Length: 174
Image 1 (cartoon, rainbow, N blue to C red):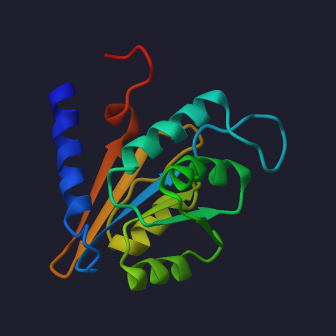
Image 2: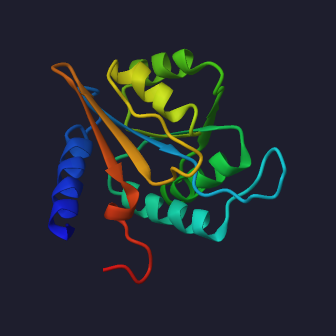
Image 3: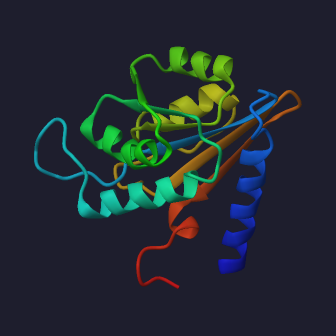
């Protein structure tokens, strides 16, 4: 299993760096749901300690993927998921309207930049479907582990669904 994870990581790294020079010929979009949120009964909860750890691990991994744009919905949990990478890379988190995913999809296609997009269980799969015109499995409220990677070139759009746990295991995991 560890060897398979390393192979997937290598493949994604190669896809992400295919256009590291910024020519716009190939770009990769990394779509995630916000990390684990607090269950405090509020409308806009922050992240749990596990969510903060997941966000930091995601940032470390994405730091090597040539991400130049970071997008988030305007909710604390989403912004907090994007924040570690933004701080690490010196990038601004740009906000999008989760009720207007077609506009975000158009913007991402026009920009042609490697980007992290942080959303929600009810928006991340929908955005991925708009970007790839393909089948993407729905997410439920307990699904924090999925990383949808969409690589776009003039020839094709490739979609990979990765497990964040396989890319960066929790402390103490082999």
